[in-house]
Length: 246
Ligand SMILES: *Cc1c(COP(=O)(O)O)cnc(C)c1O
Image 1: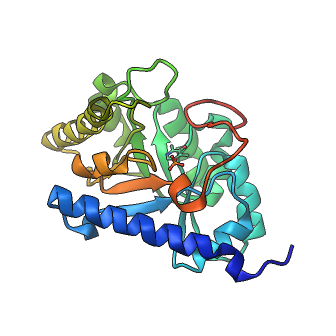
Image 2: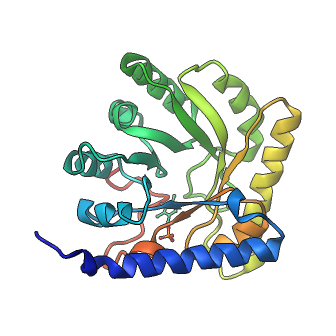
């Protein structure tokens, strides 16, 4: 159990390397680095790794399974951490989310908004949410179909426990940078169109380890980085975009 902090020296090196790449992507895009924040995605890594990351000054962590938030939050009770839900959420997890999460980036249907709202009212809490939009043509992906976004945003005005702050997406997994970039561009355009409809959505959460420079070029304000900070989730299949164990 006991581990030396030097065991995690790679975290500091990875974090510095990601920061440098973000800075370079911002410069290339003519953007101010202060406009882009990094959400470390700690899924599949244990509380000791999260604790080591906290020593680097990180306090928000993205997770895609509520069960993992539960166990890590218990192991790290009292620590100054904000848990951000980024994976597909089943409504029966709303209770734990309302209790433990500071933010949900995967809000994609009214049934879920309803369940979260009821539980948040009971907890007396208000959380930030991003609407997850499906910009990738693959059928398996979660997220709201883009055409439904205007009506969905209007409906969300009815939930005073949910502060709608922006949009989130996962790009198509593709080797073709233009295909990936088109997903990010679509999210930005949807955000711009929502503004004219009276919705102020400052945040665009898009870009992961493999594609974040493209997302920054298209206007991301937040990138979600797992592998490039914490290393490979070896032996574990990618679970985002599926319902596995969530
Ligand atoms: C796992 C995950 C990420 C991070 O992916 P990496 O490729 O490891 O950086 C980002 N967003 C979501 C929704 C995820 O599930």
